Length: 262
Image (cartoon, rainbow, N blue to C red; front, side, top):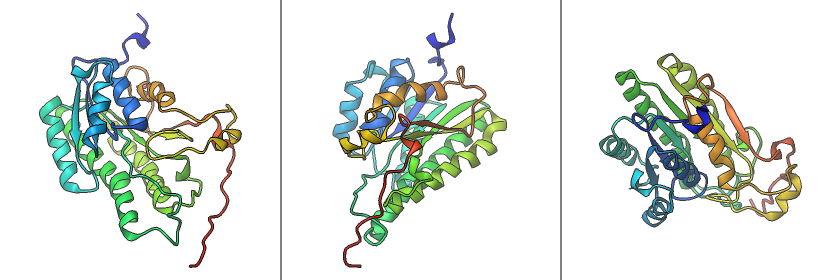
C-alpha cells in the first residue's frame, strides 16, 4: 500500500489548528479531518469557525473553539479544552493572525496594533508550541508542528508589525526544531505567497509578478501542509521553511510607502 494512502494514524493522532475559521488555517483543518484526524478548529469568531466545521469533509471529527489568542488566558484555555476534547494533541498548526491594513506603515501603526500582531503571531505561537511539546515529551510521543510564517520574514512589507512578528516566528521554528527534535517532535514553517484569503486582500494585479501566472488559493497550501505534518511522509524533515508561492519570492515588487505628513 502506498504511504500516500495513509499519511496519518487516526487511532492515535489528533490536531489543533489556529485560524481555522478562514483562509489557510481553514483549508488545512478541513484537509486534516478529511484524512480522518480529529481536529480542533480554533478561531476568533464563532460564526466563521462553525461554518468551517460544517463545511469540512467529516464534521463529526471537528471540534469548534472560539477565543482571542492575543491573551495568555485564552491560550491556556485552548490548551485545556483541546486536551479535554482530543486527548493528546500530536499535530499543531499555527495559522491565526490579525488582519493587516496597508495604512499601518512604520509611522502609522499604533502600539495596540503592534502588540496584538506580536501577541497572536509570535507569543501565542511560542506558548502553544512549548506547552504542547511539554505534553508530548511527558507522554514520550512524537509530534509535528507547522507554523505559518511569510515571505516577509525576510523581505520588507511596509507593515513592520507584521513582518517583524513573522521574522521572529521563522527563527522560533528553527529554535524549537533544534530543541525538541531529540524527542521526536518535528517543527517546520509553511511560507505562503500571495494567497487570496484570510487576512490578505489580494490585488489581482499581483498575478503579473508570479511566474505561475495567478494568485494563490488556500487550497494550494493544504496538500503540502499535510505532507509536512505527516510523520510518515516527512519523518526526516524539521526546521525547514516550505515556500508555497507560485514563484513570487523570485521578485520583490514593493515600493516604499507614501508617508504623508509625519
